[in-house]
Image (tube, rainbow, N blue to C red):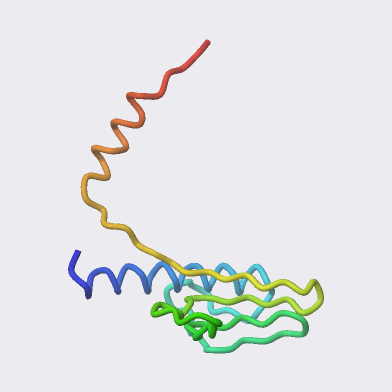
Length: 106
């Protein structure tokens, strides 16, 4: 897949995911997911959502920018989300193969 097509699909998936996360956490949202405006940091009480932030580690990691990081200070958890969009070649063929290989017991 061409790089720009991959990035467009990746950004659309991330936008929808962020919209759903913000809605679930009770953050202010726009009416539609595709008009959702992103802020790099969104904080409300105990929960912080960071977008496209670099994660620093002891070892050098070349791909260290995560799409979404959710920290909950109350529960002391940190959820790291990195979205990957695989190539969509032969999707219909693979789905048909998986359905034909499934056996149904009655």
